[in-house]
Image (cartoon, rainbow, N blue to C red; front, side, top):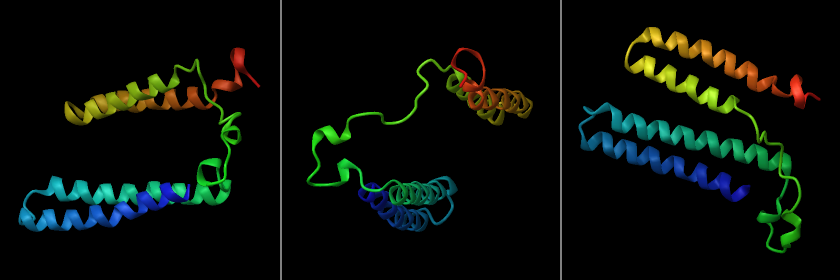
Length: 133
């Protein structure tokens, strides 16, 4: 994951420089553009840092080595919930929350309530029912 982490970390200065140039070009009057670019730089650093720490913890993958064979990447890649409906409920809660910010703040409370239900359902999905461990 070394290449991926340095790619994202290397993009952060680019976005920061572009944000400053954009800010000077619009005379710092148009706030959405340069703030979005600065936030993109911050997000790039966050993703790159996560990949860097994960790469140090996990070690070299077959994709990171030049001498790797194809069969080294086979096998289990992680645990995924193929029949889970909770990500859909979580996205509905996020959409409701953002709709509340745009239309009326009272709708945000509905989104937060749905968010709590979705997070609890997703976290405890394998604690009850057919797929309980």
